[in-house]
Figure 1 (cartoon, rainbow, N blue to C red):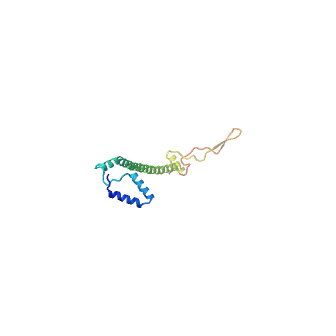
Figure 2 (figure 1 turned 120 degrees about the vertical axis):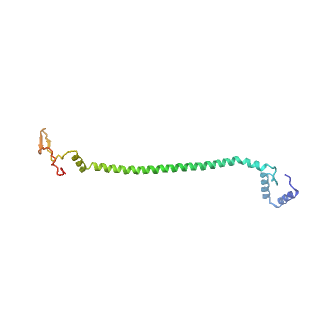
Figure 3 (figure 1 turned 90 degrees about the vertical axis):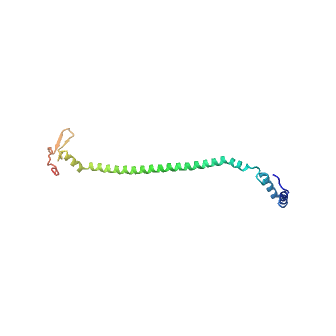
Length: 160
């Protein structure tokens, strides 16, 4: 770290032309940086400095790689969740349609004409006019109408 007399002369010339504030700024900068070498001090110095930065670079790459991997993992999980939701929505729609169809089937099976057809297929006949028995306040029963057995011809739609 030798300096030539020419360099010292240039420094001195600069010092005399600068203001007081400028000189203090330059001297502070020189003190904080140390002497600026004009050539590389040792042959292996740049390699050693680069090797000192390797752990930081490796850590930075690991953090960035972990971040990208985490984003990909979360994106995959979100897509999977979306597909499950879509499948559940389609299943729910199919089940709603099936419920509506079963409700219509129940309503059709419980309709009066359908019940009459089923009864007739089983051999049952309509009762016709029935006699009504009423019980008075004195406990005696009174019969209104005439009881008669049901016949197959009593219903106008019978025999078809």
